[in-house]
Amino acid sequence: MATTRYGDYFPGTEYYVDYNLGTDDLTAGRGDGVGTDAWKTIKYALETGIPNTGRDTSNGDRLNLNDGTDHTFATVASLASYGATATEAAPLLFQGYTSAANDGGVATIALASSTQFVNDINFDYAALQDIRMTGNISSGLLVLDRYTSMINCSYINSSTNAPCLVADVYSTSHNCYFEAEDTTPVLNFSMMLDCCMIVQRGSGGGVSKNKTVQSSNTLVVIEGDMGPGEVGLAGPCFHCAVVCLGTPNSSSVGVRGTDRSQMSGNYVENVGQAFLATTTYASQSVVGNSYYNVVTPMVITGMPLYVEDPVDAVTSIFVDATQSTAAACDFTIEKKPGSVDTNNLKRTVGYVDGSNDKTFDIHINATGLGRQGIKFPAVMEQ
Image (cartoon, rainbow, N blue to C red; front, side, top):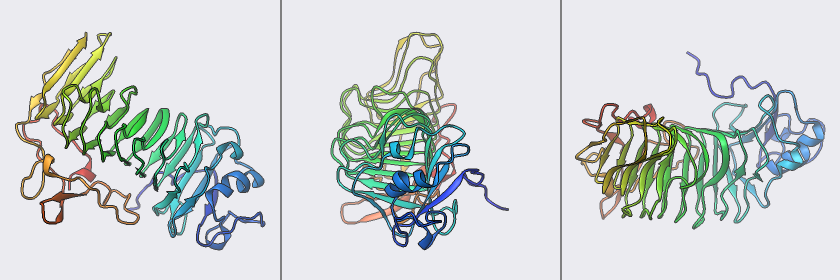
């Protein structure tokens, strides 16, 4: 049976970038094909190539990025040069490939120090798929405005005190991995997360205290300490897990829900307040949640519609083959070349036993975790 992928039915115009074989010039047909027919750099394709050939304002443009050699950036790419903001009918897509568009190849974008991928807060309807992006950028790897879509992508920012990326409301991420280094939340945006993983390598939160994120089937791991008011996930949250491996402040929050947001089937471990429900409207429900090793299981302010006390899981649900708890686990993701696919992205983590690193799969023991339990997607059930 054939497998259907996101992007199979893209009706727009295809362009190609190959950092190893491509050439940045305006030769007729350049950018239209793979290999030596491709452009060399993303920046040239956006700022010169596509504007010269003519943007597809009816169905959109897809910029296919070859996975053979890392795509590097010396200066930020300008979406303003590409043209006015994209639209729902005519989006701008960035997608990895190996030999043909949408074949599952994962392209790597390696950003130079202080050079973002793009920074166009007024540009809507951009999308990234099958992309691995790395950099050391103090303001985030990229900044985009509303209606951004990210599918099967990995974002790793090694800059101290910096978010992984910044995007605005109505943006979505599916099957993505986000990692930041230290002290600030990994994500600074209001968006939707589905089947994602967030790793804070230092101290801080998973998402910004001031943002609302709608999450499902998402895992947040904070390796360092959680400060006062730091948040793992915020907003409507379904079947997610948040675990802090450091020392949490008593007011740190696993899952925070605000007006009209629902919290159901979530698990929180080793934070100050497992669940914080704040609302001024009788429209919020908090049901089927569970926790382990927290200071306060739940804090309620305002007037939620329906509240069910979370269940104490008694023991950690995160265990390795020797039944070690989450506090003993490093949660280092195995980053093989091109490992943004569902078979590798969320499967292997590291366990530090004091003498050497060994790997193990995530084992979920959902016994006694409330009415809903933990329902991670198949990629988490290894």
